[in-house]
Image 1 (cartoon, helix red, strand yellow):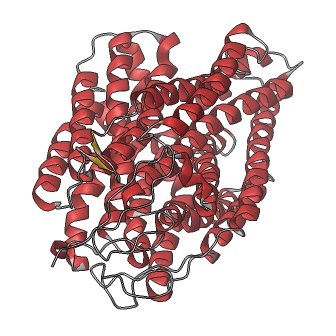
Image 2 (tube, helix red, strand yellow):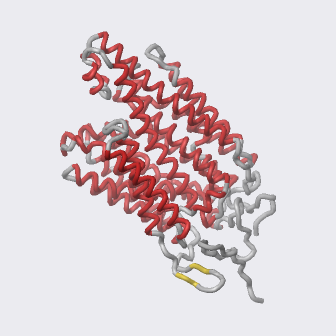
Length: 553
């Protein structure tokens, strides 16, 4: 008896993809999980290595940020200080979709392991850098590797775990992110003081090797037929979309530079900022044109015809703006206005991080039991809006307890939303697009964080400058705005004016953040709830079900 293979209909510009016999395809209908991971216990052991690798990428910027003053003191190059962080962020954002697509084509395990190796190579070279220019170049390499860590972790969970159980494990990612945010500055300060700033990079090496060996030994995924592309007529070699990758990198770089420079280092009407705007617009147009014609696009535009994927991308953008904006500016308010110690800057975010961990774990368990999830992004965006508006009412008289309660509301919103947007996008896409759709969600969150922090910084500087206008020594105070210890040297009148200016700047940031989150709240109502496959009590290896509840064979 001859086996037959069903093929997806070929449309212009879209390569046909072979499907296994009798396996339904489409949103929410992924193939069965490999037998090696039929139990939740096995998956937890496997994901320990995946989570460790992901932790390294998230922890790095937090640790390095604390070590930056010491780095500048040894290597010099104060004018290049911001590029140590920006180069890493740019490389991470630009490489994320490419890593996701490579995982779809060549197998997620090998691509994930490769990203770990690249990250470790960049870490070792960064630790050995002798000049600021070398450090920035090696940070680019490190950021390229980091781009594959997060998207690889999301895609691996998407392949191993049935959607109904997936949020339970993605709650682990929320915990990892919270630990990185709180522990990063503490660990960075300890390493810089007791071992030297180079160990902020060298620390990645032993931990990364453990993650690499662990994943190599424990992680077993199905292999892709990456060397061929099958359609009704012929077999062609898969072609990587190098043009799309280059155009995406150029566009992202222009967008980040535009938001970083505009209104801070250069006026919005300056030649440099205008050039970045033109490059961003032309680069985006060229990227969209290339993706519509590529046989294997880096970011398949067809994915965004799915309402849930598009809405998830927007909610990921909102989440990135809110999370990174809060992480960047709340400690500034606490240290400057409320007089908190900068030595324990990571602990200042605990009122926000604890709800993230608790809520994400609760959401995962409820989803596994009920299979329902639409209410969670609605609650998340709503609480983010309320938390943002509450934080926009703070002033110089706001106590730490009150601010902590506002932060807890904000953190609960992030807990409902942070990992949910990836899960919704994955549940609405086919398994073959798991890497691409995970990469898209991660990219929009990264861009939201990078562009949001830059724009918020410009808004904050403008409000502080306006608040200090006409004050004796106002220019000096504004120049020292990121050094709370310098406030004691200012006259009382100038110091009070500066504290009010900082508080006003923070209020403006969270007011804008609240308006954006309110738009996310409206968007969340339009998410289509596609039932998650899997049944209560069935582990990740349980029978897959399609949207109608029919078990996949």
